[in-house]
Length: 143
Ligand SMILES: [Mg+2]
Image (cartoon, rainbow, N blue to C red):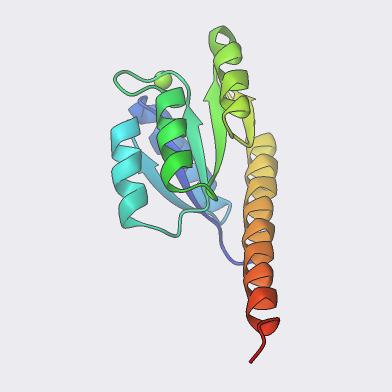
């Protein structure tokens, strides 16, 4: 599998720095953002991001708002919500709005990696299906 490109979005700087290091060690290409706004700016510049790991609770634009903006502009990008005990309901709300899954903080690396891999896989299969459908459509056209 080609190296996955993910974006980690969280307002806690030490958390983002530590997680970025760990995820990079596990062969992921990690881009970090510290706010919803920054994540949208980076998504628009780096269109190859496949999965976004998104904190629910952030000042300014919160996780739900950010999720909705991401899904509006990049519907194929998969999003995993990061939540604390107090915000599980919000994470579930996020899943109804198109998030792939959610994880409780502090998250275990193995569990996070497994979810990221699943989400990357889902996104790639989804894209393959779209390409296939497009090919079928082209080859079925009458000359
Ligand atoms: Mg937060």
